[in-house]
Length: 149
Image (cartoon, rainbow, N blue to C red; front, side, top):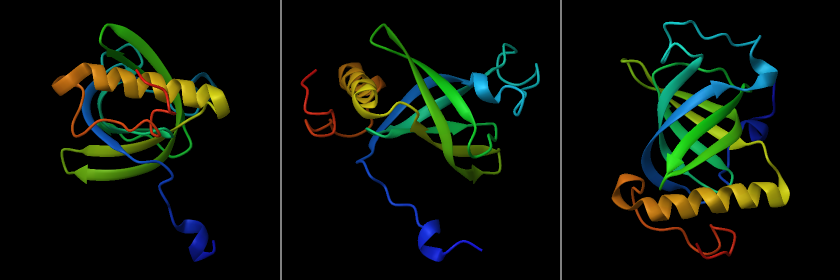
């Protein structure tokens, strides 16, 4: 059995609330492990979801489909006319309602400068999206990697 301290999840980055429609597809390395039926999502092998929070380390999604922990995914989002693809791994899954609706906590796969650049682009795009993409408050310079949008 794992030590209780290992089971604790501590957030490393401040979360920024938002409500943005996204499309999620299974990452190349996990397409044999997780196969979506043609009736799932739009029939293209992708599902629709809503991004409900974002941080420098990843994003939180609300989805109508369960995805197991550890699965690699690519989240496609369009903000202010800019299409972005966010490669990530499912770190956390919670069932929110009986509809069913799941909260999927995703961690960006990119590391170091690549992750900082990805997070900067996402936070700046959320800031520019205004009410349609932003839930509460703006990102601080530290949250956006110190760069101004």
